[in-house]
Image (cartoon, rainbow over all chains, first blue to last red; front, side):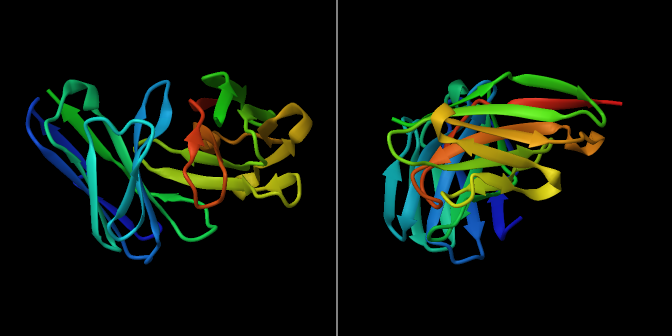
Length: 111
Length: 113
């Protein structure tokens, strides 16, 4: 949707393992975002990027890191996954003065 | 700090009835406001947006929302509900269109036949 691909779409892993989620866009948009969705909380911003190698923290950034080495890719890494990071993760993109468009999400379960 | 409150985590209406989903925001500056819809196992789709032009905003699928500054509200309405409207709806606020979004908790809309 809107040229955004998230991978993997589903993942089950164990506590303590590293996990990397990928967001790929074909729109050449400047801004990219990672959110997590949990019942009763809506979506909360984890990290965002406003250009290659330019990133900043969001509301719930503890335990997460990101990288953006190319315009089209924005990676979210959980260095050592915990059960509290079980969630659905959404990537979003936007251009200048444009609303955000979302990917289809990655369902991550940490056992 | 900006925040968004959606009144009612679950709303149920009959097919053909009025849909009213409530959203109130707090913002120290004029906000940009959005409504998104999420169907099961899908991402969020933009329904409509308020960007300081007309206060009554029309979106897709027959939805509209009215920005009321005096009430700090941006309620979503649709005159006649359809079964296909069953989904979760999120209100969100930002300082600009492409900026960080602050989401409400979401309202799940059920439509009864």
